[in-house]
Image (cartoon, rainbow, N blue to C red):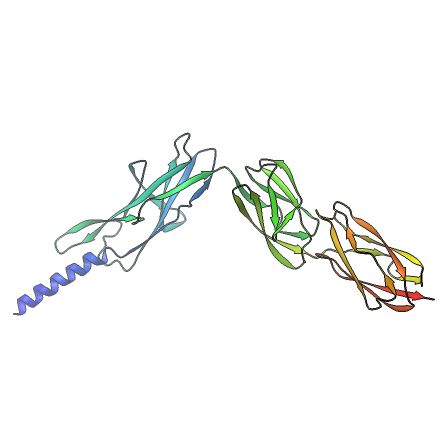
Amino acid sequence: MKMKFNASVLALLAALLILSGCSKSVKNLTPSEFPENPSNIYILSVEIREKKDIGGVKDSMRPKVVIDGESRLMSRSPIGDNIWEYEYKMPSGRRNGVYYFDIEYEVYTAKSTKVKSITHPRDGLAKFTLVNRYVVTLESNRGPVGSKIGLVGRGFSPSDQVIVGGQVANSEYHSPNALSFFVPSLPAGSAYNVSVREETGDMMVGSFRVDAAQMQVLPKSVSVASGGRATLIFTIPNAAPAGGLPVEITTNIPDSVILPEVIIPAGSRSINVPLEGGTPGIGVLYVETPGYSSLEVPVQVSN
């Protein structure tokens, strides 16, 4: 009876060793889209992690990528021991590839070793596509309203629109590799998503932070007679964006000050604003403009 028990234990241990050889985590690191490059070579990569693989034969891993019906042996990546890669030369005229990974390795059995394999993905084939339209970077990721910001990439067209924080920005097309936009009127102190809009949808670019700019006003204080007129000159450091720059002016003496609606025209850096004196009073004009520091202008209306 003792011999039968030992044989059963040995058989169970052998089975556990074989099963432990399958204990591997596989993750495809190959992107679904590759920017085109002049060499026409693209790296297919996969991460293979072993989970306490006590039944696996050391250094027996032989990952392969099967593409174009051909099995190609992969090599360890210099960026990590668990990452394997293959440099694939795309045939001329092709823009996509279909592939899967075939991972072979050895495990110990009760008598010797056995070759096992994993196919990834298990539910079908993986695919990648070459793209000739993409944005590499923003030339700057922060700036005040009205700043001109460049985009570097590939495949731009004159019909492209730049979207910043949901607003269409005034943009300039320079070449298929260069596009620029002017920061629209957005509240300062926050970051906004930037994208390039094309016929097929929006292509995400990155994030842009709007910094507060300083608006200047002359004169620094206003003194006007009731029924008389004065002129305020508002100046900004950059040209107003498309649609103009709204300037909101409020006061704590509304019966004493008469002001029109104020918008600095698109492309302009200043505007002259007429102010008419009402009933006598002493107070302050409060100036708020999206993306600019607030201003306070003392005002006195006399008899």
